[in-house]
Amino acid sequence: MPQIPEKIHELTVGQLSARSGAAVSALHFYETKGLISSRRTSGNQRRYGRDTLRRVAFIRAAQRVGIPLATVRDALAQLPEERTPTREDWARLSGTWRAELDERIKQLGRLRDHLSDCIGCGCLSLENCVLSNPDDVFGERLTGSRLMPERRDA
Figure (cartoon, rainbow, N blue to C red):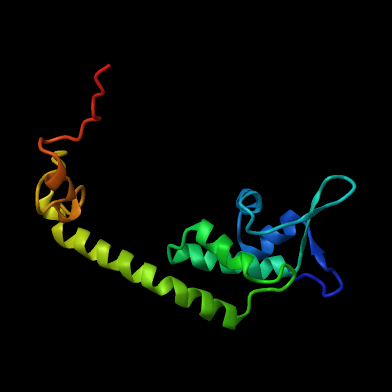
């Protein structure tokens, strides 16, 4: 992994990519989504503060556990712009995501346990179809094997 001398306070997109392991295109994407920021040189090249390395690590760790980028962006917005996320920040923010992750795990477990029940027929009124119709919510409102858009007679 390339070392960055301490006296360098800004990184090019290539340096940030090499150090973080994120593709340049991913870094550009993170920037368009407001997850990281850069300044532009007189030659219109991006320059990132060293704190961006930790932000990218934070983003990638959150992505690995399935946290949507919008949620990560909201979390990073709670931090001062020039400060890197700390261990305490991660603990506090990841704690708020625990309930969401627990619910996803529960849904995935239900999906795994009932996957063999589904034949992919498109029927949305089966009471036990956890894929298309958990808790038979469509069966209480509609009948038929497929959901069709309601027709509006003119």
